Amino acid sequence: MEEFRVLLRRMGEERAQAVVEMAVVTPVLIVLALIVYNVMLFSSAVARFDRVAPDIVVAHAVSPAGSVGADGGSSAGEVASQLEHAMEGYEVEVEVSVEGAGEAEDESLLSLVGSLHTYRCTMRMHPWPSGLSIAGVNLGAPAVLAHERTVTVDPWRPGVIV
Image (cartoon, rainbow, N blue to C red; front, side, top):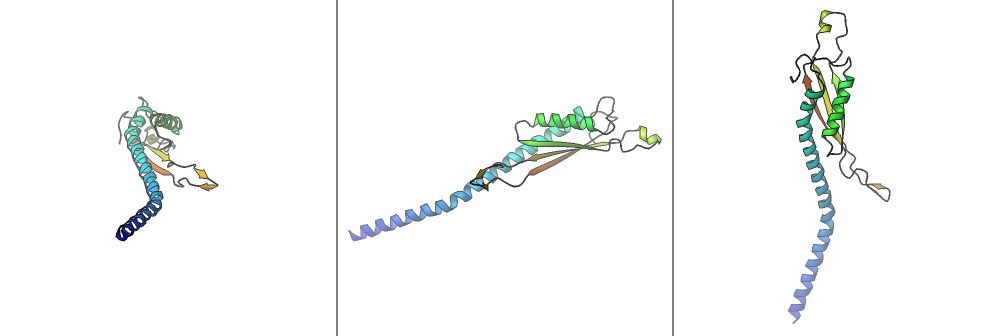
């Protein structure tokens, strides 16, 4: 009978040890699960962004006549609004800048020939939870994940990506 009591006592101690171990490991597993969730969501957004950005730049940045505004601002705004519309399922910020538009402003003959336009499309995503605060302690992720896609087009050949 005494051996049975000793065996029960040992089993109780082992169970208590497992509870303590689980209490220590659970917060680490929760943080790890949040990191994996954010990485998977960001990789999904990057795949979609990389797939739609060249198509949107070709469709909206270059008109059939091959003319872009002097500074590329109107086409960059149109590309940015279309990218935001295409990325609606994700909580991302989209920014588009144009390089090469209006750089040759001298009086030479080459200023009549349009140069290649490079559209730099940048996507920024704030990991979840970003604004979580409990008792004045900010528990959100401080980082911003960013991805950049550059697309170079020829204004004289619509639909051509260089």
